[in-house]
Length: 182
Image (tube, rainbow, N blue to C red; front, side, top):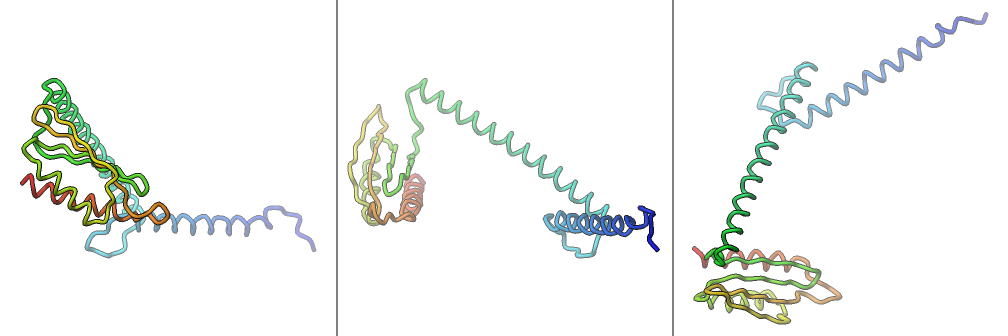
């Protein structure tokens, strides 16, 4: 005896589909909740509580992001104002500054010092030599009482560049210059 009722054959399919949907949603809720920083209590929370906690955490992150953007904008405007003043007065800040640009096995170092800080250049060269860098050329120019040094160097060999050397050199020079400014 054949069952001609189409609803009878589709009911188990609907139940299976609904069960699979609920299982998938439960897994997704669990995954979402697992991404939240948990508090000291490890009791299981109801699904609405988990969703509420996730929504609260996301809102908190959005507020923090906006605060950080405002802080960044504020700091950037202070830096732009400082740079504008420097260009208008022709004077640069008195602290020593360093910029390091790494391009494969080559480094370009820009060092800005006061004219009475000549030992910083020689000490910088010493650090570079200790790190095994090969100085290709170095030059400087003086504007008022500020000296701008440019040092071009290579680290490692073209065939086997030492990729960690740029970071090491940067850390050593920044530490050395911070100690010298202190």
